[in-house]
Image 1 (cartoon, helix red, strand yellow):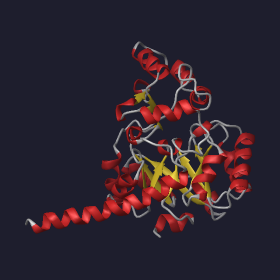
Image 2 (cartoon, one colour):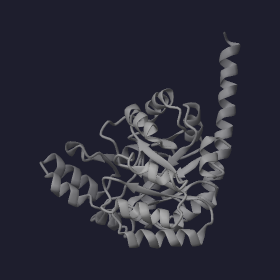
Image 3 (cartoon, one colour):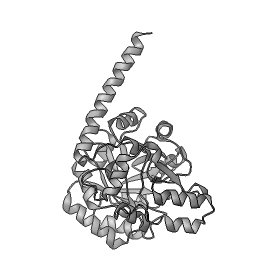
Length: 322
C-alpha cells in the first residue's frame, strides 16, 4: 500500500484515464473490479447521459471509481459536480481548467480530488488549491494534451521534486516496465488510457482495437498544433486528411468541428475511420494483445516487480566493476 492506494481505497496504483464521450460503465467497472480506479469521463455529454453511466457502473461494481470532468470542455460543470455528489461518487478527476473553485466543495463531502497537470507550475497551483493527487501527464498521452509538450520522463521528476502531494504518472505507460519506471522517477502510481482501450471489456469497435494492435509508436500523431490545441490521435485516413487540411489553412472553427466528440464517437464506437478519429498514445507501439483488464493489471504488477529486481541486479553489476 502507498499513499495513492490508501487515499483512493484501491488495491493497485493504476488509474483509468477519462475518455470523454466514449466513456462507459463496462470498462470503468472492470478496472475498479480488478483493483484499480475506473473512471467515467464526461466529455460534452449531458447530465442525463452521465447519470446513466454512473448508475450502471454502480450496478457493476461496489468498488471506488472516479468521475472525470474536463472543466473547459463540458458545458455542464456545476451540474456534473452536483450529480457526482448526489450519487456519492468517491473520487473526482478534474482536468482542462482551474480546479480550485471546486476542490473545497468536494472536500466538504469527503470526496477525494485528482487534478491533471502538465508542468511544475500547474502542479504547485493544484497542490496549493488542495488537490489530493496530481496526475502529471506527458504529451505522449492520447487525446487532448498540453501545448507545453513536456515528456513524461522529464515531467515526473521535476514535479516530484517540487510538491509533497502524491504524483501519478500518465502518458506513454502501458505495461509493467512503464509502471516500474514511473515509480523509480518518484511517482506513486500510473494512469493509462490507450492500453485500456485494447482490453476485452472495453466496448469499442474492433477497428479501433486492431489499429492499436497494428500500430507503431510513430502512428500516434499530433493534430491541432497551429491552433494551440494539441491532440494526439491515431494515424488514419481521417486524421491524416485533417492534418493536411490544417497545414493548408483550415480555420480554428472548422478544426473544432472536425475534432468534435461526435466524430470521436464515429471513429471509436462505430469504427468508421474515414469519417471519425480515434485517440491513441505513443504507447500503442507496445500493444500486441487484447487481455482482460484483470489479466493486464496483474501482469503489470508482476512485471514491475521483476523489472525492479532486474534493476538492482544491474546496479550490483555496476558496483562490482568500480
